[in-house]
Length: 145
Image 1 (tube, helix red, strand yellow):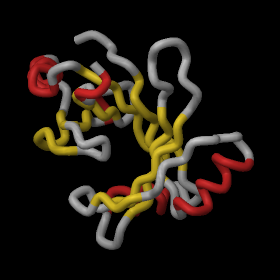
Image 2 (cartoon, one colour):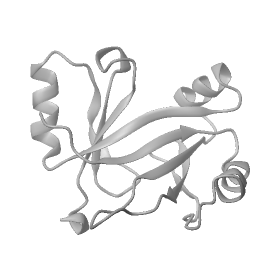
Image 3 (cartoon, rainbow, N blue to C red):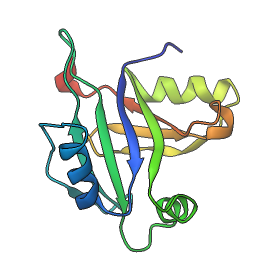
Image 4 (tube, helix red, strand yellow):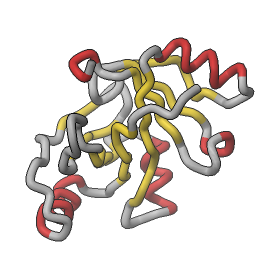
């Protein structure tokens, strides 16, 4: 397993609208995508672009607000009422090969690969197996090749 490109950092928030104001007015973000619901995962999502360096796209900030019924993000916000870093997401060329490699190493993969917010397959690896960081593994979007 080789470390792939850091695609995004997930930030849980009780209010995407308030977070947009922060990222725009305090951090100077100039490209903030429109928020959208991802009902299969029980979240509303909004991507904030960071500046691109060289030929690569910049890393994004993924703002995540729970939809009604989402226990995991709501639980995170219960412990962290202002929100905060939820996960880091790295790209891999083949999601199924990556899943098999993590499992062969004894890492706990949380569920089967499923479509994520970028429209490509993802899975999560338990933070206790990843140095304390909830880690999302994402198949590199086809348009990025």
